[in-house]
Amino acid sequence: TSSQASSSAAAAAGHGDPAEQAITNFVEWLCGQLRRPSNPTKAVPTAISALAVLLRDKPTRALFTQAGGVQLMGPLLRSCTGPTSSQLAYETCLCAWQLSFHKPALQALAASGGEAGDGGTAVTVLQSVI
Image 1 (tube, rainbow, N blue to C red):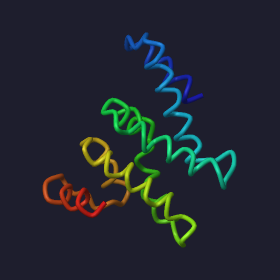
Image 2: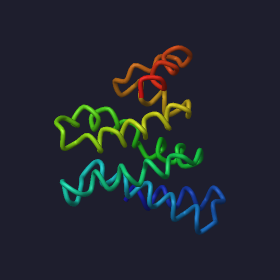
Image 3: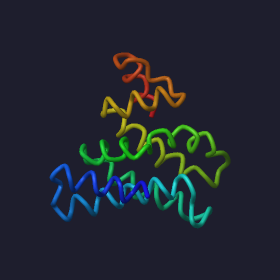
Image 4: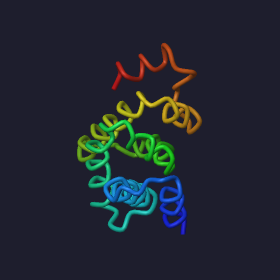
């Protein structure tokens, strides 16, 4: 599977630290929950809550970007409608804001339909709006 391939690639790259491997596996699992939630009403909010904390860490932003999670942010945010999804919208915006400080994530956001441009003013606008 792709998570086994990523795990093997991380091990081959010299990431032998068990904590790093656990975080990598967790981020990949969270991305999987965002793609195909095991419980539609609970999995996505729980995954986004965890990511809102994890993405404070710069290396985790890179892991999330490599796992393809950035492309999931736009559609997820657009699906946050109504008063019952305000917490999910807030935490998704927090994740996007944290990712805006990681250039590859910003580029991936732009490629997935976000208006990130090449950085500069657009980054400032994204960070200010969020």
